[in-house]
Length: 181
Image (tube, rainbow, N blue to C red; front, side):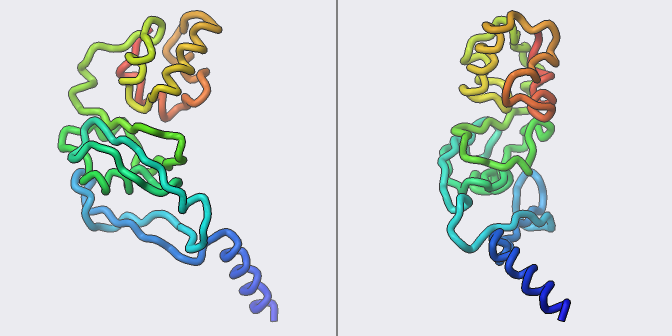
């Protein structure tokens, strides 16, 4: 009897949280994104926020840069599959395939390997367009950096950038090779 009750409770929870259908995405290699064995993502078969579509402009080291429509709460990996994958000269350390697209993004930039040798951007002097060119920084975050700088003065150390709303450890790690004071 207890097993039946537990099964009913478990099925009810799965139904309520939309876990009735598993969608499987497979990768063979990071550059070409064909088939292999990485498994992700549980998606609901009922209507929810995951059924909402968002248009993202994918730029940088991409095989087919452009605008792509994808469901909100999809992974960056799925968006990259739509674009044919990343180019051979993509900097794999600067993005996370498990990044969840929440719908607030309008542009995602995948950097090239050679960009690590590019001149660094001064976070104390850069304008919005300079900051927007940095990996994982869009116009909204660039504006937050400038607003923070105006309100608090120049950054004293690079790590102070993490005090800006929306910039955490992952974003800072992707930026640190591209910025200076």
